[in-house]
Length: 398
Image 1 (cartoon, rainbow, N blue to C red):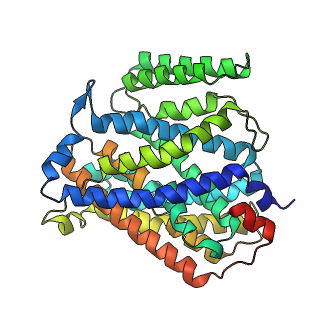
Image 2 (cartoon, helix red, strand yellow):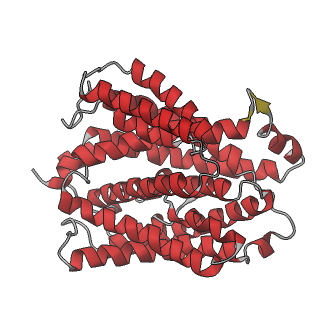
């Protein structure tokens, strides 16, 4: 059976469908948040997210607790890709891995070149990320012009990109570290892994309870609590059998898809895109940090993705799928420049004590993401032709 047909499993189709729908909802929530933040209810709207509940602000609960669920889903998706998706075959996996590496390193180098030695250097991680929901949402608008393997390539690229962002958050955005709490969290992770690998506990309940406790210990440790979500994903039992409906990992992934896509992500957008566009907004976009973000996402991302992909193929380390051409990779590179969720998330961490810098960074992220996404969409629409697919593939993609 053709490798592309194998990869286009029901799990992937469901995943793609939820992402394209949530991408549209994210746009609506972002526009709504921007309008409210710049209207007569601005003060009420923005202060709402800073209201304290249970010792943390609502915004803090969203960014640390709800986003831990988002990262749990990212971890489950990454695990699926590693076992029976694009990343399960080493040679196939190398293409999106190289692409992700280029899409992480070049934007970081651009930001670093502009901000080296300045307080804004800490924002180096902001242009490294790709927003899966928005990127796949734009791709979905192109319909039959998009080869099936391009959807898989962009998904695997975005997942690897998010993994890189997770590592960056864990390593570089930890301010105060409590070794005792961190060891407690890691010990609990080890216990959950033992329950899975040694005792083969297949019930989800103990993993969920253990994951909540692991999240609390990670929060107290100083390492960003969302990392607990990723660790939990790899502790939950997973079956390498494609589309195994009974594996706890498979069940949880499908359980989380819609709540994450249609509740958590929109709430995150509402809470984090309330950007006040004041009289000096244009000046804020000319700072080295904003320029680093804009150039990193809109230029560094596509260039890094294409260059490293070309290197991998030229050296014979990987290969382009039969239905892909370099014009497709170029278009996907621009869609990879849609940072949004992860970029905003990292901006909040990088400039936690500087609201003005966070505001300027978010505006730069939105501008860069809109630019990259528009160019990517227009490029693929203008320079790719509608595909003639066999009936079975068309039915599958529906």
